[in-house]
Length: 299
Ligand SMILES: NC(=O)c1ccc[n+]([C@@H]2O[C@H](COP(=O)([O-])OP(=O)(O)OC[C@H]3O[C@@H](n4cnc5c(N)ncnc54)[C@H](OP(=O)(O)O)[C@@H]3O)[C@@H](O)[C@H]2O)c1
Image (cartoon, rainbow, N blue to C red; front, side, top):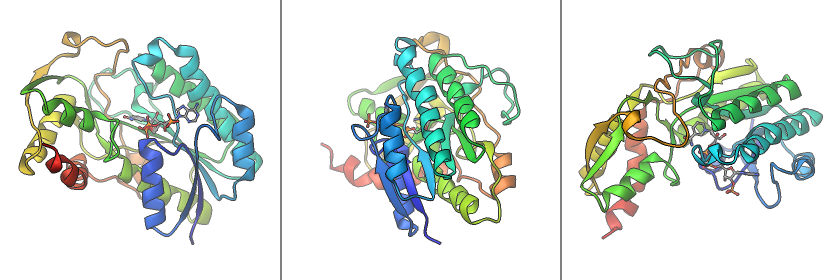
């Protein structure tokens, strides 16, 4: 059955991936974004969600500037917590389930074990606190929710680590990249596929588990090794590459602290919905193949 998706956000990585994948799989997508829908305005959220003809609401919009959030905590909370609540309440009023996206940054990153959904949270930065508050808002607003915690999102749409690496390598031979933060790069198109499969099962059955799920690419890697893998793929198609110098987080201070261990266990997603996202290396190859014409056409 073709589903009608209402996606909050239009220009972000996941919103664009949702548009691409849902349409490719025969579903319809209506995306709403600023200025028509602003997560700072409950009235605009209510108006957009009550007017839309949809089976499921996907909130792909968020305040995602992790370092800037340290200087703008009120704005980060207004968008990621209060705004997320507006979306979930409006979806509940029209009996539509909501799929909400959260983050590995709800954890403190201690140890090296992959975190379970039931593990204790403890964000290290304002962004993580605001996203955790968003989870609480969604849970309080509606039972019909799937909160997907993802990590290290990349895509062909720019505005991510991969794009930054390629841009920097165009003008520098060496890049110092942190090697002590380990996590799972997640292709936005793979995350979109997971969202679509979850939505299909929630709306049509047979499964409709609600709650929090970890949903990241398979496999774990440090930022430094991810950068090296990006440059290997880029070099293979004649794109920019740089030598990676591994450094510690202490050597690269940022306004927001990041968890060292961003590993999430995706077991619950597999058990509940039968979904495992592809390995990040496979995802990286697909993303680079998409970017190849753009990369190789640059002087
Ligand atoms: N990127 C990552 O590495 C990462 C990691 C873990 C979790 N996540 C989560 O994954 C989800 C998707 O992330 P993403 O990478 O696709 O984000 P993104 O590319 O940064 O896009 C975020 C979108 O949110 C929209 N937005 C911001 N403030 C808004 C407001 N007040 N009202 C309406 N829209 C607003 C922006 O709209 P404009 O275009 O108008 O600015 C933008 O299009 C988010 O929930 C994020 O927290 C991301």
